[in-house]
Image (cartoon, rainbow, N blue to C red; front, side, top):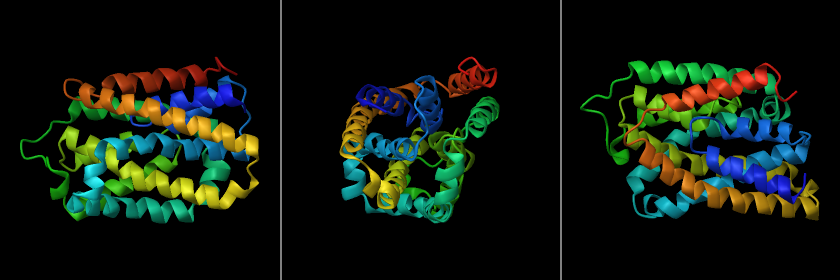
Length: 257
């Protein structure tokens, strides 16, 4: 993996991290197209640069973390299920799930179908929760359980949390922003855990490649967040569901084999 690969994958990560299309799936499939072998370093790269994208949330929502303690407590409550399951299943996730193309493709396909069906039938209630600081803690933990489904690459962390939040009666903009905030402790923990487990084995060149991807994903993600917030004001997620199905079928029928 070289600097050019790092830039390309960083762009892919920055664009897809907050969209309901699975950034992990796109990074793994992009690596396949670029003929990048799924080594231990590449797997770590695909985990750690996600936190680069997540840092864009801190830039845009820093007041939520430093001032709004009620919102922060709810974010941390939602993080608990993922923290427990992620730590317990770390070896299985990294060793088997994260680069499993079969799981990725089927998750993209089924997730796209579910996303379309959900959007066709979901109706937002007039009493839907609008303020993050007013979300009941029980619903926060349930949203965290939905997020945990994204341990299967291709599911999409944002799609899982957004569908979970809408199902539980949150307004669309509210759960989208909550998903942004929840990504911070989730990906921080995943990145720190991976660095502690494997960071000592990185070469100087690999650290440089990782740094470039990290910065690129951060910059691109800033634009991606702003796009999604504008998009949800007038549109549903059905186009993303259709896109997921198309990408899954392309790889399922072996166009890039």
